[in-house]
Image 1 (tube, rainbow, N blue to C red):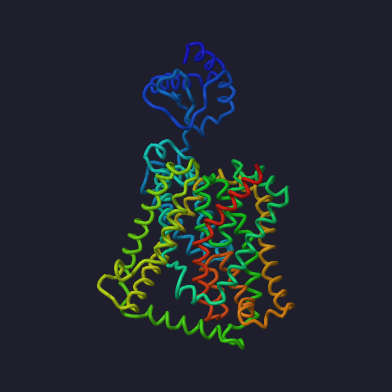
Image 2 (cartoon, one colour):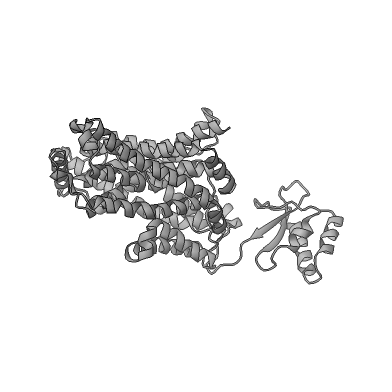
Length: 529
């Protein structure tokens, strides 16, 4: 920095601030020989105006060089102090873990928690803690110098970055360990699998119809932060075929900003406040499909009972063994996905981070084709024992994965008040997109039922099973809310024959939704360019 520039800057600063700024200039000139900073504002003739409009208490000002070999100087802003500082790693880990656990309790015990759901409750609690200054909200330098890579740029501590990275990365394979796309697993789905594919088609059709209206994509691009409208729409499509894990995987792959991610989740959960009560009311009118005149329900119930007997077998692994195996599998599959993604630059120049989709694909393939007696249960060769042990590992993976998912949502709310403006700004456009998506989804299911009845296709045993209201409602819940939501609907209405199939078709949604969302994004982006 030239002496003339320093003199000009000090001239424009009030007498009250001049000594402190000049000291910062002197220190910054010294530090510029030693370090660089990622968050910078080039010093120019308009610097004095920017400094005069900046709150004196909210930011600490330092001048550092953006490049060691350059004489240019930059402005660096550090976050306001919080009760738990950004350098207090275990303090931040404890706060975010407490938030995730508290959200699960509030989601079951309070009216607001039940309406929002545990994931959004975790985001909301972290949002409040960050906004009131309990945990840091603005990413500081320490978070960028630790070497911990972030997926969605969380709040202001390296601990938050680490938790976000490991929670989402490992939750993906853990939740998919129970997914199988062949053999007995698909047979257990029965006719519900056909209903689920129709429900998924309804979601996809809704997204396509929404984007065929010119004002929708324009509004999304204009209102969602960082022009992430297409990314969030693709992620919401994936979420409403699979679940929250697919939403986060698509957002991570497309490098969506944290403000956009939070806005999409909040709006989607507001829409769900209308959807799920409506589905529950409609479902309460029907009895279990085993009471129908067809025997599909009886077959499904028999298979479910047999499966439960096997799961209750004494040959299951102990909880410790199951958790250990599940974690090991998730780590190995994640490492494989990361390795393949690191080698993709030899094949394609795409800037997308495909590590999570690749990990998803590897997990689905492994869960479908692995020989349990060769890896998971080497001391046993009996088929029933192998299946019981495989199921216990899948359950352990679901437990670990769900816990990590709650932890991830807590880190997603850590930016705090920074999210307020983005949510308000993008709410109308995202809500309009989701209203069309939900509306078309329901219309497709209702229209198919009426079409089958009018064309006398209901005389076909298969189509009669597919359009049964119980299956259509369960399939819709599996698509919009995920396997846990579908199973909860079946259980609350005592649809015992659909309990296990609802979990299985939900896992199919987990396996496919991320790829559907990414393909939709690619097609829409290409058509709009």
